[in-house]
Amino acid sequence: MTPPKIALIGAGSTVFAQNLLGDILSFSELANADIRLFDINQERLDVTEQVAHRVAQAVGAQPGVSATTERARALDGADFVINMIQVGGYKPATVTDFELPKQYGLRQTIADTLGIGGIMRGLRTIPVLADMSRDMERLCPDTLHLNYVNPMAMNVWGLARLSPRIKTVGLCHSVQHTAQELATDLSIPVEEIDFLCAGINHMAFYLKFEHQGQDLYPRLMELAASGQVPESNRVRYEMLRRLGYFVTESSEHFSEYVPYFIKRDRDDLIEKFNIPLDEYPRRCVSQIGGWEDLRVKLQNPDEPLEVNRSVEYGSLIIHSMVTGQPRVVYGNVMNSPSVGSGKLISNLPEECSVEVPCLVDRQGVQPTRIGRIPPQLAALMQTNINVQALTVEALVTGNREHIYHAAMLDPHTSAELDLDQIWALTTDLLAQHGDFIPRKLQAAD
Image 1 (cartoon, rainbow, N blue to C red):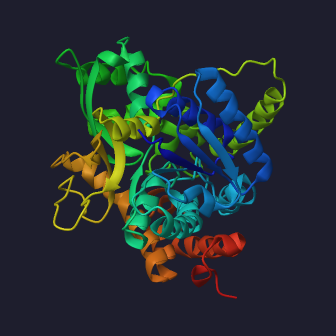
Image 2 (cartoon, helix red, strand yellow):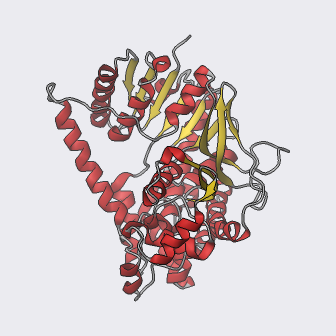
Image 3 (spheres, helix red, strand yellow):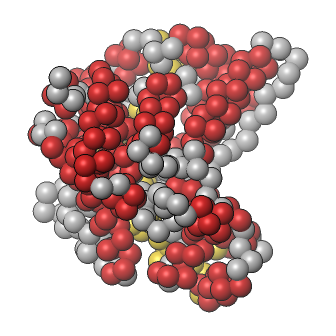
């Protein structure tokens, strides 16, 4: 069997790359894979290259490992492309996405998926992904692109419009992480839970959650009604009470996808629902510190490198496609995967990105048709889809006005700011981000 060629784009995300490499190389069938590491930051790339060799040694694998700052070299002939870039980084881009809106009284928690921060992240990320996809069309047209980059739904949607030839599936860990959390809350081993989940990324819901054929929703509703829920999950349990279904993404994320929890002059809500404002910048600082710790650790040959399998789907998809072993994963794909194929979720728009269970084997990633989902869930998702659609439309058409329309329709932004404020903030953000935004969309002089 020819070793698969696997390119990691943005490999300077060393800790995440370490997890993925450990997952991949732990499979005997992938232990001699051709691993190509790419990043624009040479220092971080060097550290990840060291990590790759240390991981291989720890699991007894003998892969080919190469590192390059030339993206084309990493992509050339790749069977799989794993994407984990962050355009603009923590500084200046993420800091701008948080600090400038605060000047208008708009507070955020994560700002990487929706909201004004998510819109800006999409505007600076999708063009880079599209440029990379054009390279893939030339260098590895039959590759499978595994995207881990947020804003997930916008990215998958934007690539479907701008580079439809490349097969892309978006991967997140919110489905499996939340299943583990709920299993813990109910004191049931997660491997005994049977669930079905569907929706859009970060706003998918468990349509079925069972243990040995018994519906677990009555127990979850009792827990929600008791108020004795984990402090970190108060938002999601509150939404369970209101909607009847549990959402996959964390409470801190979800609090800024809706207009109910983060409100000006309502710090009582922040306290009641334990909402960690400015959470993502804190995580970034912690991750930067973690990278420094890892770099120092790697320089000590006596320090063991621990390798544990993660819950990420990437290695499972690669293994199933290489070996034919069938698996079910949750992936983000277009609601109509091909022309005339029909919708996977029938009461969501045909042209949007959805998160659904997918069968994976030698034939690739095959999404499951869900049909209708509960109407209240579809309606809530539509409020987020509106923002995604307009952001993608701005990038595809070059119409700057659609950026303002996206911000205007964003649930959290529109609940906090009036129209003049939304227009002014959007203009300021576009100007501040400068060349990270496509020139045709930059603020006028």
